[in-house]
Length: 301
Image (cartoon, rainbow, N blue to C red; front, side, top):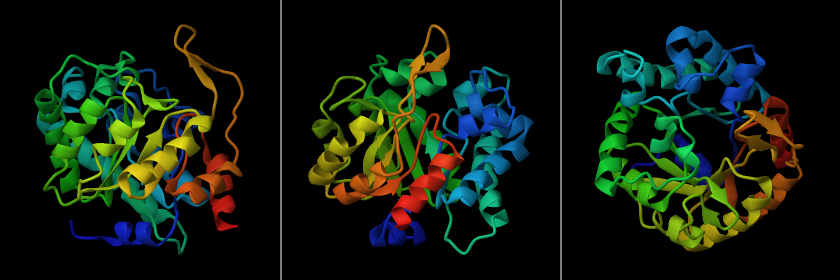
């Protein structure tokens, strides 16, 4: 794997990731109650995506994660969008994030991470938090590889293989990024010391230990309390830089379709995560620009 400016920066320090793209779009008044989630806006309101990315860059993020988490050929097909148009929309997710970086007035280096969510995200039925879809590794590889090829053609700085619930799917993803010329990070959605599918994190992190393409491993879309133990384990198992971007700490009530509880994440936690080995730090669901600004300030101190 040839190094790029992102991998060189990762080797030299700690980078700030953005926060939840969906909650920033919703805060701006956009309705995301759709199976395509934020990917719907790629076609309908691309300027809204640029504005959301720019807000996070201006808050102090070095890396914006694209609106392609739920952008798949299969998901777009259900909305009557053919493969050619679907591919164009996936490419546009990278281009929109790049446009936001260009429009941001800063001397900080800015990068774009092309998001590839798990198979369950395409199903839009909550199985992304369970894994175990009943598919073989070959079937999961066949699902992920075509869209990763399209995203690679848009020249992102890195792939974000994110919110992966299952080590079996991670194996398919690690294979799917081979030979594409784009580095990747692999981050699991976890519950305590296990993946959402129930595997030990030691087993899960080991999946990427020998992958040349995977330049960082870690966790996202999890409770803040799960982060530090995962960082230490990921660093020990793989020897790679660690990526972390947990949720705010609030809990999602699927029946009420609402967030409950209070945020438990705090900017001062990030220094402990960095000291434990995290080199990419940001936020996921319910983590907004203010929190990202706090993360950036804490790391700067």
